[in-house]
Amino acid sequence: METYLLDWANLLLRWAHVVTAIAWVGSSFYFVFLDSSLTPPTDPELKRQGVSGELWAVHGGGFYHPVKFAVRPPQLPGHLHWFFWESYSTWLTGFSLFTISYLWNAGTYLVDKSVMDWSPQAAVAVALGFLVVFWLAYDAICRLFGQREGGDRVVGVLVALLVCAAAWLACHWFAGRAAFLLVGAMMATTMSANVFFWIIPGQKTVVQSIRDDQPVDPIHGKRGKQRSVHNTYFTLPVLFAMLSNHYSFTYTNAHNWLVLLAMMGAGAAIRQFFVLRHGFKLARNRHPWPYALAGVLALVCVIVVLAPAPHLAASAQASAPVNYAALQPVLAQRCYPCHGEQMQMKNVRLDSPAQVAAHAQGIYQQAVVTRVMPMNNATQITEAERDTLKRWFEGGAKLD
Image (cartoon, rainbow, N blue to C red; front, side, top):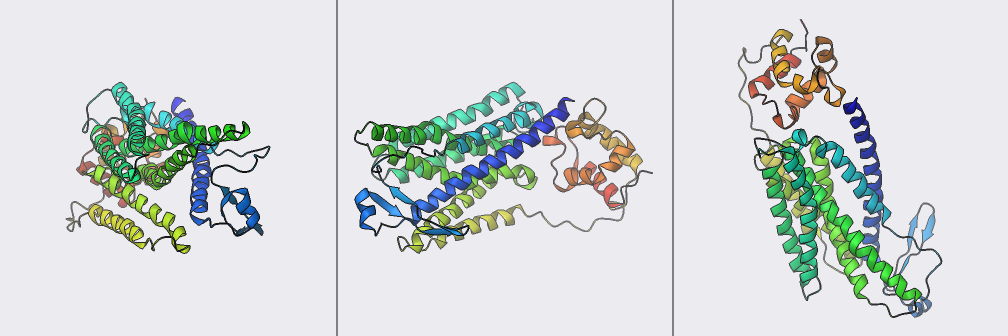
C-alpha cells in the first residue's frame, strides 16, 4: 500500500510541478522578450511620465500596449500583480517530488554502490547540501563581482566553473540518474532563491519608497534584473536535467558528467540566441546565429559520441529464442527483490508467468532497450542475462 500511495503522490506532484513550471518559465520568457523588444516611447506624454520603453503587440484578437517605467511610475495603482508564486510553487512541488522520488528511497535511487559505497543517510545529507552550498557559492560570486565594472563576464565564467565542479562531483558520488536530477534541482533552487532573496525584496523596497514618497535607489532594480537574467540562462539546462531521467543513454555513459555539461551548455547557448534575437530585430546587436550554431553543434557532438557501437552479426545459438524456464532464474535473481512477493515497486509483480506476460513489453523496454532496470543495477544483472531477456521477448515472449 505504501508503494501504491507513493506512486499516486509522485504522479500528482509531477503534474502540479509541470503546471507551475510552465507558468514560471512562461512568464520569465515573456518578460525577457518584453525587455529586449521595448523601444523608446514616441508619445510626448509617455516621455513626460518617465516611460523608458513601450511595445505594441497583437494577440488573441486584441491589441496590447505595455510600457516600462525604468525607476518609478508617477503613481502606484491600487493593485499590483507580483510574479513570485509561480517560482515558489515550482520549487515547493519540485522539492516535494524529489523527496518522495529520491530521498524517501535513497538506498535505491540515490546510491549506486559501484559509484560511491555509502549509507543512504549520508547520501541524503550530501544531496541536500548540494542545494544549499551551490546557492551560497553562487550568491557570494554575485555579491563579490556582480557590481564591478565588467563584473557580469566574471560572474558568468565563475558560475560556469561552479556548475562544472558540481556536475563532476554529483556524477562521481551519486547514481547517474540522480546526479543529473540533483544538478538540475541545485540550479532550480538557486533560481527560486534569486526570486525569494533578491528580486522580490528589491521590488518591495522600491514600492515602499514610492508609497512613502522617498527617492528610489535604482540599485534594487539593477540587482533584481541581474538575477533575473541569470535565471533565464539557467532555464534550458535545468529543463534538460529534469527530463534526462527518461533517457538512460545519457546518464549511464562512463563520462556522464561531460554529457550533462555539454547538453546544459547547448541549452544556454540556444537560450542566448533567442534572447539576442529580439535585439537583432531592432538593430541593437548582430545576428546571434553563432550561438544557435554552437548549441546545435554541441548537441550533434553528444549524439555522435553516445551512438552505440555496431554489433557483429550474432551466431545462430546466441540469437536462438529463450523459453520461460530459462528466463525464470534471471527474473528470480534480478527482478524479484523489487517485484516479488515481499515488494512490488511501481505496483509491478513479476513472480508468476501471468504477471510476466502482462508486463512483457515493459520488461523488455526497461531492462533491454533503456536499461534503466534494475535501478542503478542494484541486483547486478549481467549483459548475458539482459541478452536472455532480449531473446525471450523477441522470440515471442512465450510462457511454455
